[in-house]
Length: 300
Ligand SMILES: Cc1cc2nc3c(=O)[nH]c(=O)nc-3n(C[C@H](O)[C@H](O)[C@H](O)COP(=O)(O)OP(=O)(O)OC[C@H]3O[C@@H](n4cnc5c(N)ncnc54)[C@H](O)[C@@H]3O)c2cc1C
Image 1 (spheres, rainbow, N blue to C red):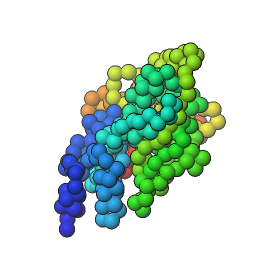
Image 2: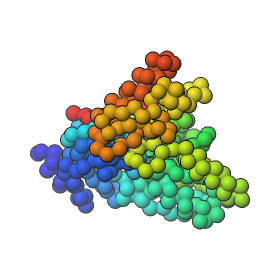
Image 3: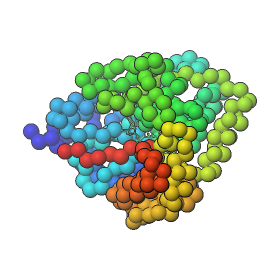
């Protein structure tokens, strides 16, 4: 049977076909997803994952789309958004079970309203908890993974596995949760009682956002800071990357580690610009920058 018939036959799912990708990411670039679906139950995600594996069909997981670059053109495969998996349940006065599609900004607001703290570093980071755990999103020396007691994932073999905090390895903008084609479903997180100092800490993190560009579509920092206490932004700036452009993709003149879409950039423009910037820094310093943005490649 054609894959289209198989996927459309799955129960309780509103499968969209040839669905535009640009509105699904903060960079607003990309082509069309052959299939797009935003399931509201774990059962549905399990069914989709099992079908994709059985039929050897490409599958892409998406949260808030704030750290991704999609391919242009028609992309074969299923794009699964977690945005409808978005509940939060308090288990104790400090501990909550949070779904992967829950927005990080809403989580921060919620814990502050309850007089809790621990997530101040996430102020101003868009996207979902699942995306944040996958890349250990954070600021300063902090990352979201440090707050989890455990994470519940769907594994390629169909098993739902609970990974305790000490089974997850994580560091600067990386976590083992991104390995092995896991789908992050939810996490148990523990916060702490807030102190008056936490408000200042939060405001400090927000203040730092002032040095980032506002107003044009982007996907946050293009590159990770390389090891050795270097700043990717400074390396890019010193290599003359500010204002470099390919089509409508341009390096911000405010912060060289941000690529902006000033109108109708294609993903290919952004990709070319990423390569150009990395080349410039490599030629000048010998340092190879690693993209922080997750570049989705077409699979056959
Ligand atoms: C203006 C701006 C500022 C930013 N500032 C910061 C910052 O200060 N610090 C920082 O770390 N990041 C920052 N980012 C980047 C981005 O917001 C974070 O990386 C965020 O955590 C990504 O979450 P998301 O839900 O948007 O993930 P997406 O962009 O949707 O996905 C990112 C990656 O996670 C994977 N993924 C998503 N959900 C799941 C899941 N449930 N299971 C398995 N894999 C999943 C995707 O496949 C993809 O590889 C910024 C972005 C913008 C636009």
